[in-house]
Image 1 (cartoon, rainbow, N blue to C red):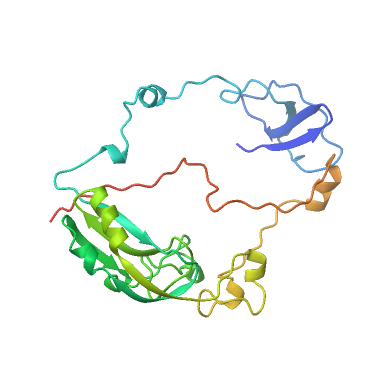
Image 2: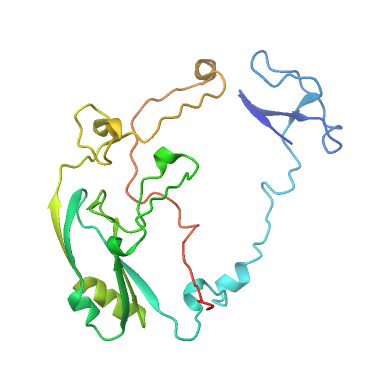
Length: 247
């Protein structure tokens, strides 16, 4: 099932393949221009939705409203350790030295690792694009943004792990940084990832439909620049993990 929406003055139209559910809808004249006029389709006014506009109860509403819902943070296993990450406080810098000695002496700390303790294997959000695989789980040699992972601590509880993180000392050699995407792609901008021209890992262009025709049909067109803060997503995908070793 697919849909194509089109706005006309004072009415909203939809086209979709004719099915048993919509075959009795009164057909409307097709629009004077635009797509969606293939065989086996008809235009009809939107109505009788099963979900949209209907007061449907959430299946998890009662558990969350009463506090009965359990999240990963509510779970535990015997002898469980808690982890904390030390993150970079500078946007672009070489890592000269990481001193974990004081943190390791803290009672309750079980392990501390840095990039030197890892396989130094990069990963990326698009693993099938080699040019986008450019991030270490824990920074190696240098950091490239504020908040990048520099060290990880495992301790008997969260409070101890947090205290240990604060005891780790890192010496940086700060490097030129970029803070604007337009400036970052200009020739001569500071190189964040070695060998990546103009700081562009890859470029993809996606074109859908007739943009100029769509603009021509609009009642009002606004052109502007919009920026978002560092955190811009809705908190609907919080990340947490609970693992148990099974030797």
